[in-house]
Length: 70
Length: 188
Image: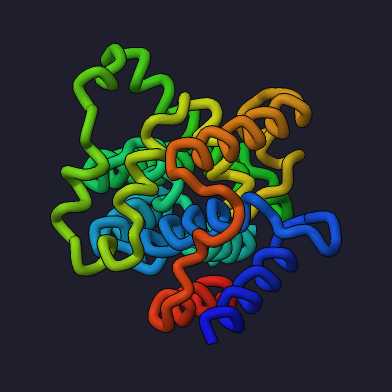
């Protein structure tokens, strides 16, 4: 079973990077950890402070614009 | 005309929002800390917003934002002087806060190793190996030649392997939970 798992992971890793066919990519584990780490942060989503900030920037821009005739 | 402007604005904001999680992950990778990363992202958003007109619609907004953030990061570092000597253990310190989230993924060791890389190698491997940029795009973001990025990435990989003691086989930790997480991460 653990062999199956390992095979599956190797295949995924092979697909995800350019590697000579048939070779076990020595960087598979590194690549995986790198993505796990990065994805963990990405999955945190967007903190409210940034949504608020964009809201304020948008509002400020609207207020600053001269009211032009439609 | 004003109508077009408005719809451009909305498109700009929408694209910016769509890039934020990825941008923020890059900021965390560069700074090693969430609080600093979020300050950096905030500065980047404000710069990007103020320079909307210099963004060419239809081009890669993500690459544009990454470039702004990266420039901002290095210019702040130059201003403050490097705090790196001081920052030993920042990754582990930060990540002891969420052991349930990160410890399980065995990522603490990885972050510590990542932290040991020279800045140029770390950003190269993050851009290409995690953020999803092509070598050419990463080179444009970092303002260097494609070959330089390639060599930085390969040096970074070699160094990480060395630091983590990964030999290339037998280090896949094939227990069920780990495998499930992995396939989820790859599936996204």
